[in-house]
Image 1: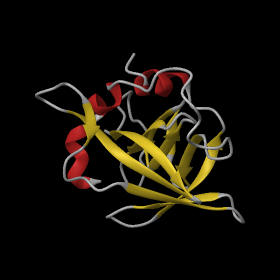
Image 2 (image 1 turned 30 degrees about the vertical axis):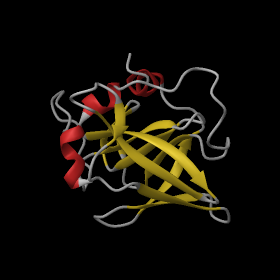
Image 3 (image 1 turned 180 degrees about the vertical axis):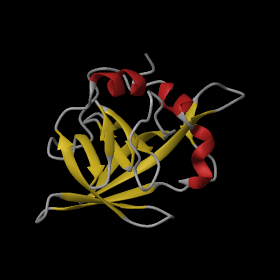
Length: 156
């Protein structure tokens, strides 16, 4: 994820798949997931890692400081957000990191950035994010994605 840090929040404001698209992820995988050390200020991640997975395949992975630090005097630590498009193969969610092509303006897989794998364990109901900087276990925080994050994923 370090290599993709330049995709920051702007990557979250990219186009979204049209409404009414067939579900890509089953209901038990859609929603907000986070690491045990994740720290939130309201619904906003300020530390740790969170994955926001929509049933339609759109989503985001957001990572903040580790170890997580609370907001101090109204200032929260910076976070990195990556816009993703997911597919499902068996119990593995494949998260392709997206970017906007500078020439065409089209939404495309980020060049040179490998997809992230999130393996779902049916017995423990956890997702394991297989990332270049180490595996992270995420637990489902909520079956719904917070409204502000849904708007960012949708580019609103």
